[in-house]
Amino acid sequence: MVFTEGTIIMHSNAANKKRKDIINQVKKRDTSVHNFQTYIPIGSAPKKLKQWASQSIDLIYLTSRTKQNQIDQIKDVLIKYNFPKGKLLFRKIDQNYSDVVEKEEPDILIEDDCESIGGKKEMAITYVKPLIRSKIKSIPIKEFDGIDYLPNKVEDLFYI
Image (cartoon, rainbow, N blue to C red; front, side, top):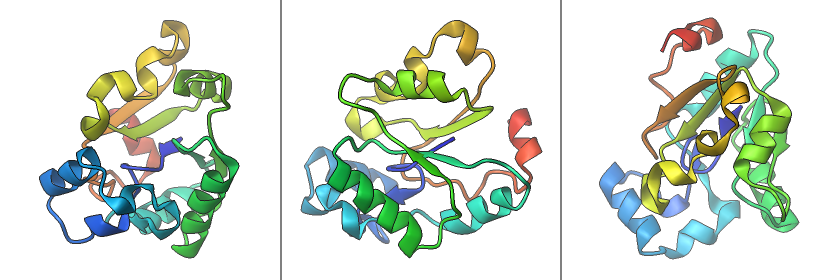
């Protein structure tokens, strides 16, 4: 399972900016932050995910969006930039991220550290029940740093 916003895609005005400047854009509510249909990949995220998808995994995306039109916009961004096919999950109105993660029980969860919106308390893994959490390899990354540096082999993710 890979979180979308902040982990593999970002708002368009973040292009070619330093991480600290991107975080400030989010905090200051840059107009492009909520313009989901114009989101762009972070680094070479589509390429990295294609490498993983070629290793016979079931790829799952998790979006922060909860409204259907916004979910569709995130889905369209993933298609536009040739991210590999995968299930796109989202929270229903009465759900938390932990509910989605607990239901799906992924082997691996890659998500950003949510620095721009409050840190660890905003991360999906934070409130997952301990028994389920113990079965998930959680890989937190710095928000907007991307996943390019992660291993090419999915099995190597378990050793990070």
